[in-house]
Length: 485
Image (cartoon, rainbow, N blue to C red; front, side, top):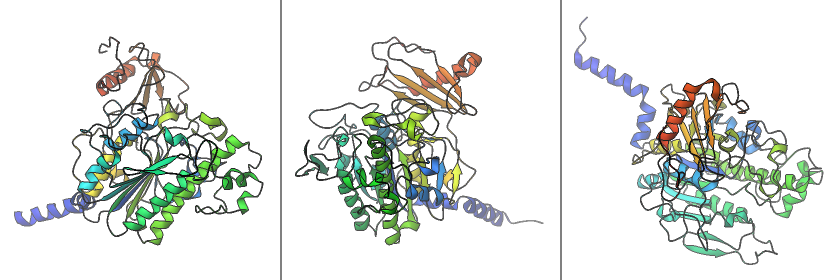
């Protein structure tokens, strides 16, 4: 039977379009969803109920997992605040991204992102999204090149300086270029609780922009040290009757607190209460989306900037905050960089799904610009994980994932398939021996098998050399004679 060539071409075209209709629609910018990205501060892999937490109750984040996808091998951008945020927003790992460490500026602020640095928020702006950031910035003071208003955000409210965010009752916050003084807050008085104020502005942003596509970035400061909260949770949570006592405001209710641990001492109790408050704020956002009829067309992502901290009396060992992984904040072992990652997108992401896809913060940029139909980034180390979200079998895989850390003598890490390499004290000696772990049967990184696999060690060393580009602002090997391996 002779089939006309024109008809055959149409059939092939129809099949091709059918297989890729969803991704193509996103690239054309059709049916663009609202985007909410919630970033916790110093929350560990095991701090949520959906990741195995048994002491602290997190019903709203557990709901996010049950209605969406829970990633089990998703990594943060770095093991401390500023470089992790830089990796997220620029789509570049710490061997390339502009901010690679916490570098303080006086009298207020941190090293700013340069004029040349492009964020995905800028690309979403160009695609017609209204953009807002509410929480902790830490990537450039007001008036500098790293000012959030110059890096893609129409509105910013919160702590510009991450050093100021160590206080939950600060003297001031920032609303764009305006310094908002919190009258009465000082070293002795605690009147205005900053996270609650920021949460009010966050919900108002959703309300105000309900009729247009928006990108809401929520870098919440909880549960970062200092360990502190309003008296309603600081005392009431652990009076022996907290499960029957709803919180005053803030969207809490029965079961949203820590169950069965009335005898916990205050540092532990306060940390647990801060995680519960974080969970409550997420619940308020989900409820607001429901009330406004926006939930079906909103993609919600949740992650943490790095692993759990130990400052201020925090006890990650007691809560198993790292979920059985080795290390905490400032480590490049799994506990310092593998964090919770949840995505809910009704009708697109299968409810209750679990993904073992190995991704990282620098993948968020290509994923969101594809979903939004935004301009492509000039450069990214990331790969879009949209196929994973949509349940398609076309997901590209990273050849490796790379991190570096500029404190504690300098550290590097790389993951390639099941293999994880870690190198310590590289500033003193860039050729320090590489530790090797097989994550497929040693997720806790207890057994260094470098001596047994010299060929794998050589591959990971080559990947480290390839991934690292020296920075004049954050030099890793300054003053050392680093030859290629």
